[in-house]
Image 1: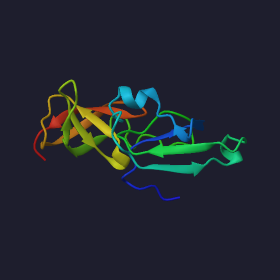
Image 2 (image 1 turned 90 degrees about the vertical axis):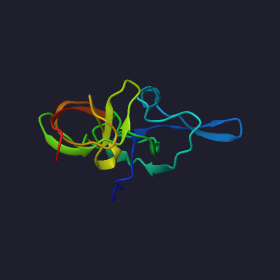
Image 3 (image 1 turned 90 degrees about the horizontal axis):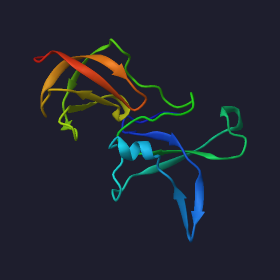
Image 4 (image 1 turned 135 degrees about the vertical axis):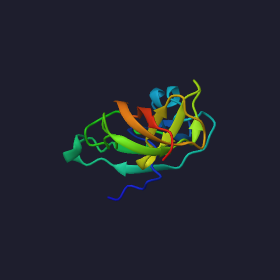
Length: 142
């Protein structure tokens, strides 16, 4: 299956029934990291989980557009960066704590301290988590 570069978040979730609606719960971690904002509208894709990928109960995998990759089973995408990797990025946004935010493949976030919106910088990835990485500026002009 081809995965679009526009995919911003991927996680497993159960579809439940609440009153007359079907509900897919977004993990709390996506709200806490700022990936998903309550009240915003996202496109959701449901992908059947096959028995050979860990679920024999016919449950579904859910992906939703937000701003990170997510933790979970090994069948989910791994971060597109590695610790020590050098990347050239453009700062697209400023996070809640004032750090620069760059996005790479599949919307994966690299947090870049001391960067400003619009800057193009060369960074070394110093920390990698499932839904974001931290990069240190090693060259401000690329």
